[in-house]
Length: 85
Image 1 (tube, rainbow, N blue to C red):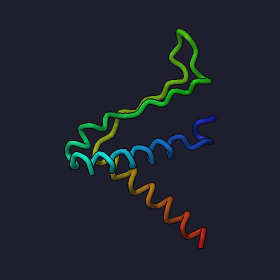
Image 2: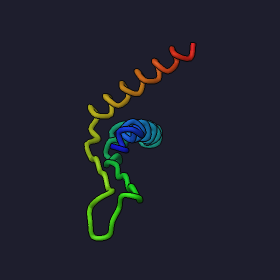
Image 3: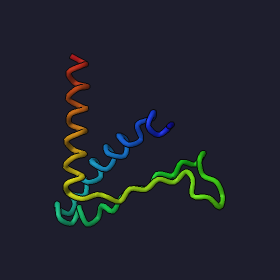
């Protein structure tokens, strides 16, 4: 599957983490969670008129989910840093 090979899941998580941190700085943690509603990915090459192909959505953006994302991204960046040393 193209999306797995390209690690769109990782991209989604990193973008969500950055957006959430930005919103926390602007509004505080509680309001930031309220303003984080989910994500849509529109794969233009996969979209066809009259069909629901090429559209991905994910709306599970709870505090627990964001904590898991932060942890995963932190582990990946630690591995990357260690590999660079």
